[in-house]
Image (cartoon, rainbow, N blue to C red; front, side):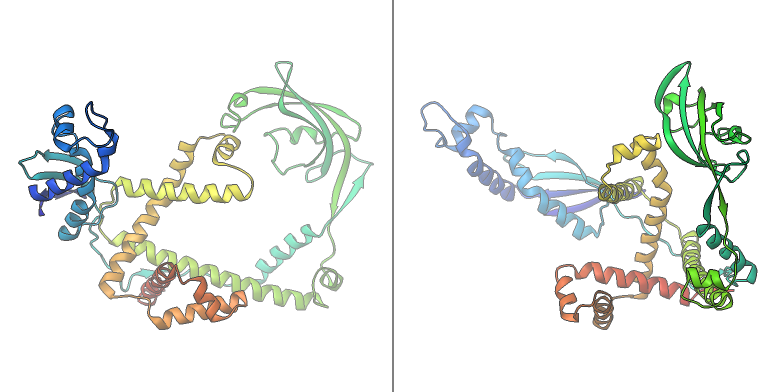
Length: 427
């Protein structure tokens, strides 16, 4: 085969592959043998007509398409290998020349992996996030924990106030007609939580148990149910009960009742240590992400749209699997959120671009710095999995025996991030 690169601009490569006539004729003969049984010509038993008679009746080019399909995979593969092209999409094919007495000339056009020009990736500077946990931070967390351990006390001697929890029955109407999802009985609602339509909760303040209140509200213009967006509705609401949170005292009894500690001071000290550890881990992850972002900003690359499209499809497929575990599908999710599949894809596009950029950055650095997963790295990884899953190293090796490439890729990716962070200037 003769291979010639015609052009390679803006990540689109065009090349021709010339298949010698002798090889083309061999492929035509093979195509004839594969298809002979399909032909039924008068004067011959079905499937026994000779090639010349079939070509006489159907044209000399009757087997050309199948012959091209026989030659196509090798022609395309050899072209990519010789020209050192990495396709990121399916190619477009054009048959330039074909005939019994001619060489077969195939023209391919394919989007290829873009060239990455690395900028500064060693010594990039970022400022670390402040991770010091103060006593005030601990106080705020303790208040959250107080709220989680609060008791609900029935109130009967006053009207509804902000932050109360009320039990209500309600019936909603639009232009005097009931609408779907607009009615409920025994609904629990926290006043001030803003979980209902804007203005609904405020109009219940001042109502007493047993009162029936008429609530007038307007659905937001961006409401997820399109037919209700911007519509004015009326709710008839009956207040069945009022409850108020009773917060426990922050003392030693609180620590004894809610934790394994005997005093509040012991609990505070332990909580502060755990909050500090969590803050440090979050800062470390954030620093790693910011180093990568900085390196991406410094590189030059023109990314084909098809690579982003493919990443979005991968993200959609992964999301579908997550939904399936919850008994949902992508259409139900889109309907619930008031959007469409196209809206969901559009919302994922920014993250998809970041993933593609990061992947290209890592590949370029791996190639330049010769980062690889060694046998020692693999052994260490097997040990970690074995300890985490309470299995033997041999069991883990058997588990990954058919997918070591995934494990190696994971190790190389982690070592690449470590390399960038180790060489960064984190102030």
